[in-house]
Length: 465
Ligand code: G2I
Image 1 (spheres, rainbow, N blue to C red):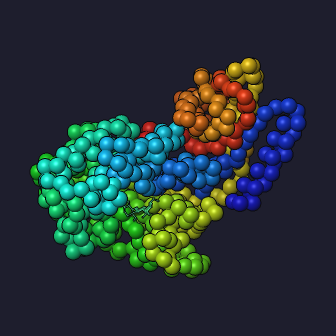
Image 2 (cartoon, rainbow, N blue to C red):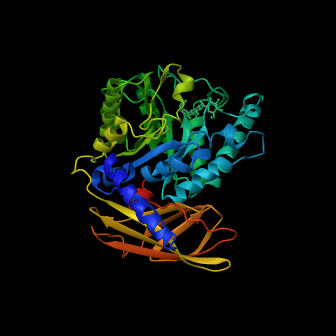
């Protein structure tokens, strides 16, 4: 795959150089388009699943942004939506990183899983250091949920409303909320979240609840009783922070029993940590572990979302929390996919077809330019490959703004542009090409961006939780 991709890149570089010399402005990037190389989000969509990752908003540029946008159909802010992040001082809010992640997701046709509204950790100091009556605590929590869920109404489609409510033995964890309000803080939080955005899916999320055991059974009993009482609960999140070689044998059975209660299930924070240094045997075991988790989700229709807790080893909580452990994610710290990546793809039905023979590429050209405006054209060409739908993404480097597009639906959020095929030009046959055009404004400079090509997310993948 690497050989073919670099060969294609070399051919494109030569092509670009020639065209630039001839005065045309062009940028292109190869997208190998055979099934083995389909992004995880497309493979997951074909199985009726959403493929997600936790992200850090400040990193969503360059290669990190390219991979986050191309491979995943759902983003979870790793920290940006936690109470301590959004309201560091009482009454004074900082939504910058959360907004950035939401805008990126919108520009890339992705869902956002909001994480998390009610937790014992990462709360602001003013909250944890205060002394509150139960009535005050209740009001604080209701306002927090109303403010945050309300702000992202219609933009965040799933919330981890309550995070980590249980101890390992299945008793309730002693927290600010449990100690002050009793176990019904959970029902209250869910009810307030439903009121703030009736369309959002509401989850309870915990760790060490992947297999059948005391803790997962406590969660199971809680969900059953909430449903019996008519409290709004749509799903459970199994975090799945796993240790190499320790995927619980009862994972699929456990997912199924929650599904049988009538709720959705999501694997919300998957990672598989190993003692460092990594070696090929450990990476192979890790691949088997990722494959087993993915397969268990694929096997249960109501397992709707598989999210990794960071996609690259350079952006994982593991290394600082478990000294001597790491390498827990599907891409290494230099963004090379690891065997775990291939394992996820295979468990989603990819990676089993003929090796690549060609690629589809997107070429960007400025076809005319005047004092404040310009006309651009993107041409998608396939050779030895074909597309049934497409999405061209780029980032403007100098404040350019699209004003109008034809033969594609374009959205621009900040500098990020994403253009999906129209209803009539999604198909690009082997040996064929399609194009779309747009008008934009520019000032000072109008540099040519690099265009990355992906397949359009299906309507089903966009709306599923
Ligand atoms: O701990 C792993 C995850 C367990 N489930 C709930 C998740 O919300 C949790 O995420 C992690 C984040 O990935 C870490 O990034 O939660 C940690 C805190 O419990 C996050 O770590 C914190 C560090 O402790 C802070 O020092 C740091 O300022 O990340 C902060 C932002 O980088």
